Image (cartoon, rainbow, N blue to C red):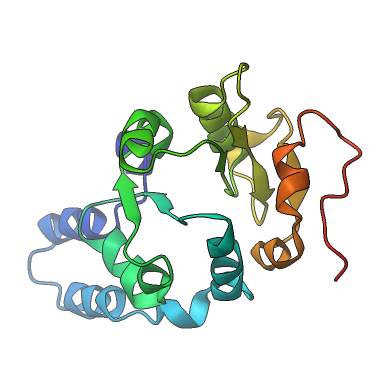
Amino acid sequence: MQTEIGYADYLGALQRYRLEDLCDPRLLTVSSFLADYPFADRLYPGSLDALEHVRAWGPTVILSDGDVVFQPRKVQRSGLWEAVEGRVLIYIHKEQMLNDVELRYPARHYIMVDDKLRILTANEKGLGRPADDRMATPGALRARSPSDRHPPPADLTIGRIGDLLHLNLPALLRVGEDRHAALFNDA
């Protein structure tokens, strides 16, 4: 189903299974499990601290792919919604919605953190203008999707989202100009 619509549609998949077996009570158990899943317990270490740290750089926005019901619930139940003060945008294909992001959150510079290099590349092409080099793209790499086997490199690769706590913002904004900039503050 993910290849059909572009994101993992758990609720849609449950509905499809339900049509195959209208009387299977296990589907109700699975739906309750999904609705009440402890997303806050599953955040990557340092996620909320990293969001608090980068908030000093400017407004933080969560840009996500997903459905209009389950994805916002995941973001809310994880504590991320509150951490970014409700600045959450959820699209079917976030990399195709960069004009909307710019309209809602205009900025001189954008820093995108994502675990998929194909998304970082699309975002850099969508927002990064050679004249003002507005997009820096550090990647918090935890997994590679099959389509990301040989993507172009991100401006900076970080091992985990918590590494943002030590990132040097002025150097990151110059990353295209000076590859030898000290990107990390002393930890």
